[in-house]
Image: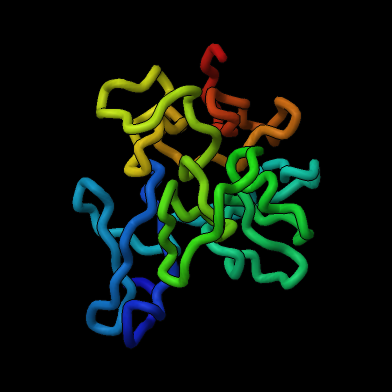
Length: 193
């Protein structure tokens, strides 16, 4: 089950699609394993979807979901807003659902404020943009379409529990997805925004 490893640092980061949060991944018995908040065992390879239709922050089409820059398998691409996009110098200006990052992740994938996201920068939310004027939220205090994240912000989530297929680009998403609250693209879901 999962990627081979000798120590915890050999394991890649993974995300819980239901809560949109990073899962702690550990090396157990030479395999990378992690748990989401409901205790269900997950592995990174279970989460990545290929053949999605998404739009990068610069308008370039993307067909691959990712969690880390190396997931893209191409030196000319990096992982931004959880999709593989062309690598350029200004990706961190858009890495937080279209907003600029608030810092860079440390070597352990942690942030002093916010969450370490796919582009290895710190953002208020694991996906998309936070609900306006929220910090230190409590469960149940966020508007519909948002959840109270570990970072203390009300963060957007797809209602079907899937990881967003990127962020909206000028209000648009790839085919089969719609732009939702918090500037995230969700497959086959339509909310009034």
